[in-house]
Length: 256
Image (tube, rainbow, N blue to C red; front, side, top):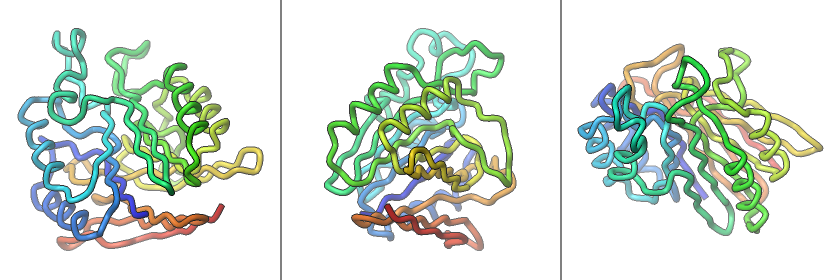
């Protein structure tokens, strides 16, 4: 099974040339699923969501999408009255979606919040209810591979250390450990990396994606990831944009 992991598209602050190259690569890769891990828009405007919907409508495979902090309106009444109304109208009604196949079970978790007990509302949080949902989802699944996607990363890259911006991260990691999740997909930092975490003999790979098309790049160019699942192994290809196309710059394989 072949899954693409894209993140931080930031429609409204994107580059058209990169958008077109990304869509062409996705549609030419014979994918079974595209996972978009949040920050679909830059400012959560109607125009930006319309652009995102048009992009997603051109995909030739199913999409599983979760919102990010940029997908909530800024400091206006909509944020406090109906913070995800535009996201639900244009992208998806379900904020914590799931996808199931015989080989892979995917659970999406919405970590974006209307308000937080911190000056920076761009941070995220995971609730107790969401942690229970993770455990219930995988307790009922027979798929050999278990994948969670969330916008805010729970781990950091050793080569690009940033503060973890996820409230209740210990609670989330405990749920991931208990459910024996194999891969956690995230974005937010615009930096791609893989960090393994071993608990009680089980390895969880924390895989981050760079920004797919935003001009807000950091120490890496635009990029995304492709995961190729077999019954007992997964190959992860990390791609970056260069000279008009996306090419693999790093790959790793992991076996169960």
